[in-house]
Image (cartoon, rainbow, N blue to C red; front, side, top):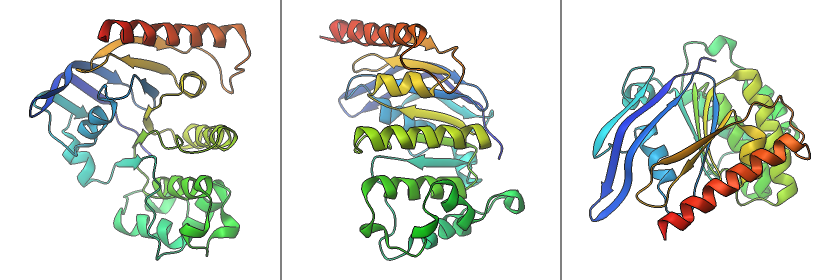
Length: 253
C-alpha cells in the first residue's frame, strides 16, 4: 500500500455567510499519522472534506502528492471513515468488504489481503456471513475498518470513527487500528475530541481555533509505540494539548 503527501496552502472556506476556515496551512508527510483537535464547529470536518475533494475551497489549495484531490479520488486512493459505519444492510459483512474491492480496483490488487483475511485482521472472521444490523456498534466499525483496508487507499481520512463507542471498545479498536496503520503505513488524518486518544495514536497533534478555524498550534509526540499513558512524558503532552485548547477557547469567546 502506497501513501500520499498532503499539503494545504492559504486555504479559506465560507458557507454563504458563515466563515468556516481561515488561512489554513499544513503539511502531512507520507505515511504520517496526524490528529486534528478543536472545539465543536471549528471546521475540522470541513477541512477533511476539502482534503478529500468532496468540496472545493473558497480560496487556497489542497494537494495530494502534488495533484488535486480529484486525481486521488479518481484513482481510489482516499479512504474515509466516519462515526457511522454506513454499511449496506442488505449485504453481509463479507459482501460489504468484497464490494469495496470490486468498486475500488487497485493496481496492486494482487498484493492486497483478501476480504476473508481482512476480516480476520479486525477480529470478524466468524461474522463474515452476518448482516450488519445484527452487530454491535463496535463490530460495525470493525467491518467499516476492514472495508477501508480493502480499498488499498493511500490516505485514510477518519472523522471521529470511534466517538459513539464505549470507552473500552474505543480503546481496543484504536489499538487495533494503530497496528494496521503500522503494517500498511497509509497517511492518516484523524479527527477527535479525545485528547488522550490523539496523544496515544499520533505522530503530531494539530489544534484548531474556534470558527473561523485555523491551525492554532502543533504538538509533536516523540514517544515510541505502544505508548504508556501513565508515563510522565505522556501526561506532559496531554497537559500541553489541554492547555492549547483552553487557550483557544478563551480567545474565541
